[in-house]
Structures are given as structure tokens and as C-alpha cells.
Length: 249
Image (cartoon, rainbow, N blue to C red; front, side, top):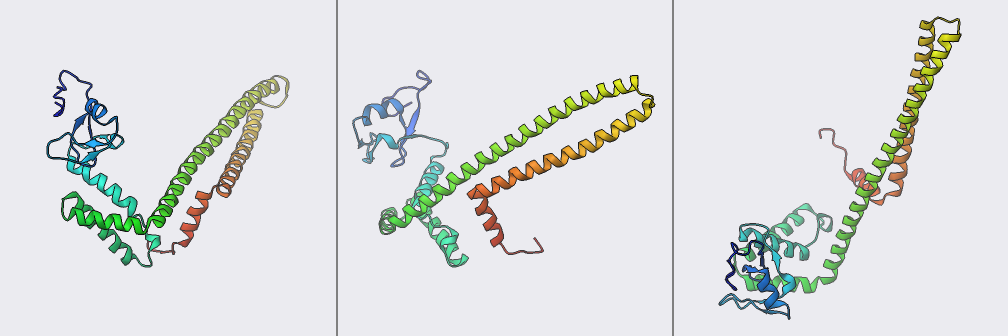
């Protein structure tokens, strides 16, 4: 039942409950439309007082609201404290940075020094706004490159399959032709059938090896073209070359 309009879910099976990260109070979708369509308004729950906006409402994912809240807080904090290991001189400094993030998430999730923690978070965001934006853009570019890379990989895979199927059809047609040629030779040639079959098997084996090499060469050429034209693949190669060789891995 919606605590605001008292509509029973049994009578309205399609009713959806939404929550707002400002307070996480459950409100049915109809009440959200009715109360917040004209703009921000106070949460209708008694003694809440939080100002809510319609575009911030979302469907609850986790049954446990504490988990939902922690994930939202973690997402918000990570969007501000968004440095990566490459931004630090040492691993120790990076680990300390991660510990600080966990402390912030813990305090906000458990209601410990919330005002002070949020004030420090807002201050950090204000002082490092450009750096945060730059890192978010950098991460977004990486994600875009990864999507493009996966799409390119799929196209490469499909191209290889297309070539392979085409060669298989050509080989099948060739085999049919060879069978007909064998029958003609067995009918008109003075050579024994056994010798003719051996000759044809030898020719087929040579052609099969040649076709296999052709397919390997074509595949290698496609891989080479893909690696040369794909910036994400180049980055992977650079990252791999930067890792020192360890014989005991």
C-alpha cells in the first residue's frame, strides 16, 4: 500500500513504487507524478522535510534499502574521488586514497558525521572541479574506445566467418567437379581405377593444404589491419609491453 494515497497494490497490481536518493521513502508512481510534476516539493512523509525533484526518483533495485543507499552513495563519491592508480606516484598513496573513500562511504551510509562529511565532499568537488571533469571525460573516452573495440572485434569475427564459409562452398563445388572428372577418367582412361583414385586423393590433399594456408594468410592480414587501425588495441599492446617479464608467473 502506498503510504501517501493509501492505494492498495492488491487492487492496483501494476502500481510501481519509486524512491528518491534524498530520503529513500517509498512513494507510488502516481503520487510522484501528482506531487512533483510542477517542480521540487517537500517529501510527503511526516517529519521528513527533504526537498525532492521528480527526475531524481527511481525504481528500487535491492530489497534492502541500506544496500540501495550505500550503492548510490558509493557511485556519487566515486564520481568525485575519481582518481586512478596511474594518478599516484606510489601504490601506497593510492591505497591510502581508497581507504579515505571507504571511510567517506561508511560515514554517509551509517549516518556518522553526515553534515561534516558532505561539507568536505562538496569542498573537495568545488576545489577540484576541472580535474574531476577531465578524469570523467578520460574514463568516458576509454569506455567509448572499449565499445568501439568490441564492435570492431565482432565485425572482424563475422568477416572471418564469411570468408571461411565462402571457401568451404568453393571447396564443396571443387569436390563435386573432381568426382565428375574421376568418373569421366574411369570411363575413358586406360589407367586403373585404383591409380586414378590415388592421383585424385593426392591432388585433393595438396589443394586442401594450400587452401588452409590461404585462409591462415587472409586471417593474419585481417588481424594485422585490425591491430594497426584500432587505437584501443594499440593501448593494450603498450600496456602489455610496460609490464616487466616475470618467469614465475
